[in-house]
Length: 70
Image 1 (cartoon, helix red, strand yellow):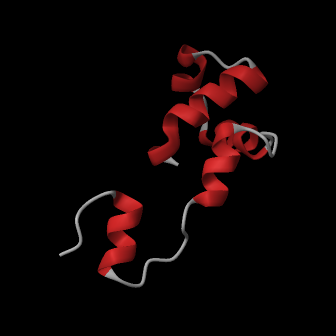
Image 2: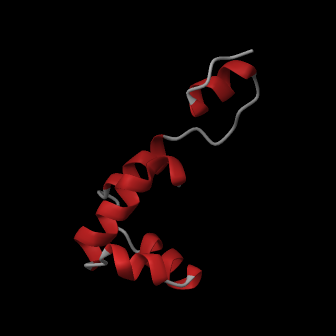
């Protein structure tokens, strides 16, 4: 989620009218509810669907993190 933070923040602002100050003070529960309620066409939802969930090799880890494989 942190990797796609700009999408999360933008989507929360666009879809739920959440401003930065409100986001900074928001409870974890409320945050998760709002993220879970984002539309399938939100930037974060699209990024989340395209993010690999399993990393079995150094190459997979490098692809996910952007750090060179060692």
